[in-house]
Length: 356
Image 1 (cartoon, rainbow, N blue to C red):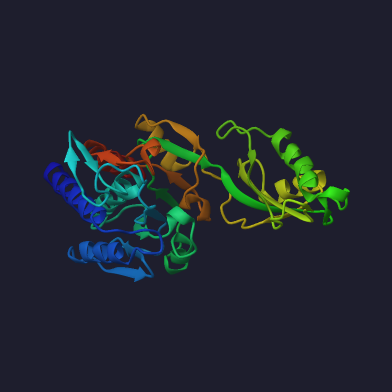
Image 2: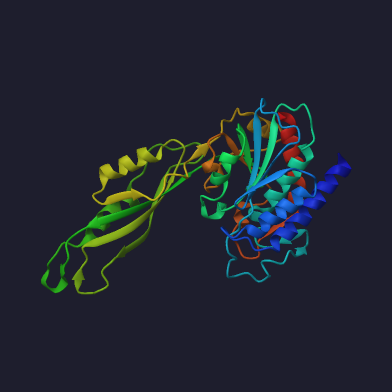
């Protein structure tokens, strides 16, 4: 395994450098999808591209067996304006590989691909292994994992590659953005006419600020509601506004459904409340799931993640886990330690060896 592992690690680092050097903003991942197709195809592996998503099945895929999906994304955010290095130059300094997307989530992506290659020709395993590199994760777009899933065989569980320092994120808060509208009546400010929609909105905003949802998750803590935007259509200083709109960022733990939270809110406020989407729901994987038990046996700890990933769009148990550190994501001069990738590949293989 040692020489094979060294080759896998070296090739993973080289691939990541090539991906860093190729811009792949969300919805613009065409070139990196092509690079991934070439990399997989050069190894004689049949693969499929749908949109900017690329996936492949293990050589001895057997539809009678359960299937594990190895998934990460190859899109990136746009570079932080405070970059001091070229975000598209894969520079290595003091064991760090710098570049946009190196940490989020290029290191995870190439590590999982290396692991897929390691298991690709293995026979007589208990599970099939499917690899998918997907698009639009950074914008929670519909052209990424959600678009890809119908093309995949039945998936029983997944490892989602995101930078977690190779610890196990077993739960995620759901994200629901609420558009709220308070209605008043227009009038002239000098004559005390009308009914000020801003004042009506402030009453409801005060409720959002002070209300606490009472179900507290041992993994994710309390759910949270934050008013983040407020505006009126009126731009004249002397007109009482008839309409005031505001936005509420709602992070929901796994103990609530979105529908339950919306119903509770509507019972307490006077404004109109409309969710933009209910796609990014809270998720959790059982602590006695084979993937989690395997990770625990390797000394991995588990926690609830405050951030949302493609795990939220998967209708099957998924473990979020990968090399790198979430704190570095979207920062200027983003980097990942090369050793984090090398160790991540080994840990992934050891974890799957216990399951497969």
